[in-house]
Length: 353
Image: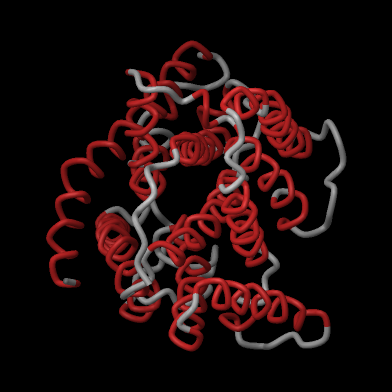
């Protein structure tokens, strides 16, 4: 099935950038120079926003062009992830004292490359710490690819994927496997992808209503409210302003993340052509690279090499290092995406024709 591609949804690109930078901020806040300023340790929920967005985008892809779906997903995700993984593995071998939680062996490298969950003595795999989210992403893609192959119909395939994932998560109530990889895929986090797919069905219906422009603009107000409520709930829980709403991450982060994505979609009329929108689009396009590579800057260039210069007695230097680290993380992601990944994508996609 192949339909006319839809233009980029600017609000979603903005939210991708926002989510990536939230994760960067979180990793800064929990390290030395973040603690020097007593920064609120929040922002991990950027991952949950990504998961909801991923479900939404995959829903859209399934409707628009699901030919060679899995091959396209692999080309989009794997090359850059493998590059970051090999770089981190090399760094861990060269500077083990700086990356002591990373255990590089042939087994851990292969499991990391092929998205097989595993444990190391000090943390769970893969070697590239933030790559744990891609284990869930690829598992989700496999489900969608399988159901598309079975049903040859996007609505049925997405519905079957959603039901299957709900059932899989539900098995955790009565069956707890001993195998870590199997246990990994009973995690309710998978429901965030389902929520994103449901949202795409709602969005698809919404776009058929042909609402007057003024009404769409009027919906910006509830959009702002939903976005603000979603972010507030996640930050307030992290900073102990309120108790966590649920025991599971898919509840205490996933539900507010869903509200945030809904609110952001309603903000679409605000993203008019201009330099600011272009900047946000560049950051959104580079959000995957920002997410994959920010650990090299945050984890090493920050606390390992300069963290000693930014203790509690030097909040000014700490603030400067935080701002610099955020800026370099964003800039490096945009550069990697624009001048490496996009060119690589064009080359690899030629093999799909």
